[in-house]
Image (cartoon, rainbow over all chains, first blue to last red; front, side, top):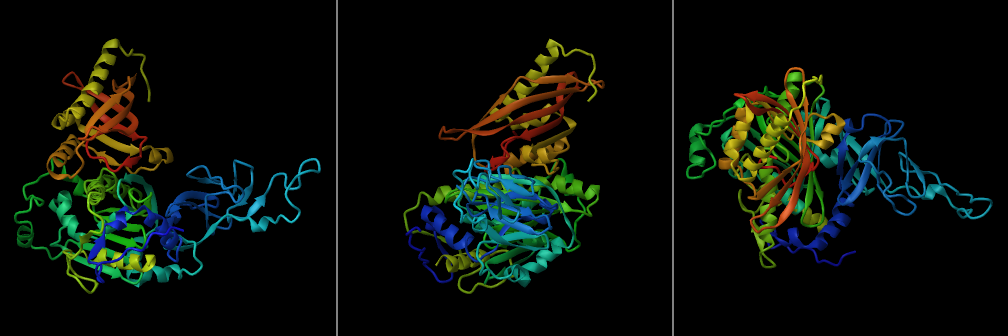
Length: 412
Length: 163
């Protein structure tokens, strides 16, 4: 156990965030204990990644490497990737198919549910040695997680106290999950970024519609996202989840011009030599151009134009995280729809016109806050102070405050 | 691919090497505007994660299918995008060249790219392979297809300027 004191919050409405939250290495250990090992659901993967019995993938719950697999009977199972004998990494490939897992070190063998099924030389060799007579294999299971699935999204938790997954996701988030996963997803690939920033800076970023219309010129100029569009921030404050949703409706050009007067981020005369990137038929007729959901603590489910992704924010110590994108289309997409999604991969991922800047924003903040004196805090007041409520506006940082409110409740 | 008996001449090797070297030089000298000119008008340019390629998954990190899109990238890098300034250094291996019956020149070369910050700190940024199909435009070899297989698919932060 670490002895780091909890963060003391300067304001009750979380409009001030002490920069210590991004700098104090002791907090990373506390987050593992209280948050990732706590009574919360951690995203593990998509059901389409492990369609067949024995299929497995490795992922992370906080800093713990975890294997997610499908058992012979089609159930889901997950365990910490460490042998119950001497702790060696058990599963050595990132993905694969196996109905049992044998540790390389002493060949202890486990089934997909984490039960120990084989111990070489248990009864010794030539009548000598071996395990004690009372050695009981059933007492040496892998460290397993509780696993539940909702509409193809798979989550795990170490705590027996965690509420059922649908309740945890909550009605407000389920509406948007259902909207996307009413079709069977089709895996298109993965992207990875190793960002030199604390993981919570990325969570802040995706809960912050204020920056989206100011940092991302491309976004703004080509109409994927502007604060003058119809926007909503929808929150499940008790659980720490949120949705930022933007639809290309109710926008007046005069409002766009007024909003960007004097700001060099909206360029009326910016033209692409090849704008065909935007000639992709929409997946839904609701004119949603941008939707980012955050499931507490560290999963994003996103739609940017025609692209769909999960983004898993994997902490690596206090000042680095891996952003792991799972990029998907849908089983009923025709060839042209898939081609459209491949073309619009240019918006997202490590090199994406929009997303590459979010990695840079994280780097800039981590670098900047490291230069500040102890005890200083960020200012989170766009959208007002005080109560934390849903709002039909994108000129707001209220969902950032809601995240910290939940974080503070968890971390004590 | 069907290969011909036509020989890879010393002159072709020199021309291919020259194109690869020119590509590296243009990028390392920050002459981005010249970069699209090394490609044909109908060029297809992709950056692919080796992880995805190994699994047969199609999602590209970058997918441009015209010279215009390469120009758009340059315009965005110059005028629109926010990213860290670094000096780059591309190290490209000698090319492996094959000719096909339709006179396309298939070239494979490996690369490593180093980034150096404004403060002079150098780090290995990316390793991978260029898989190119070259064709002649006004006698000059140009990239018609370029697939960049990125071994460093756990990308250090992001990819801004061309690999």
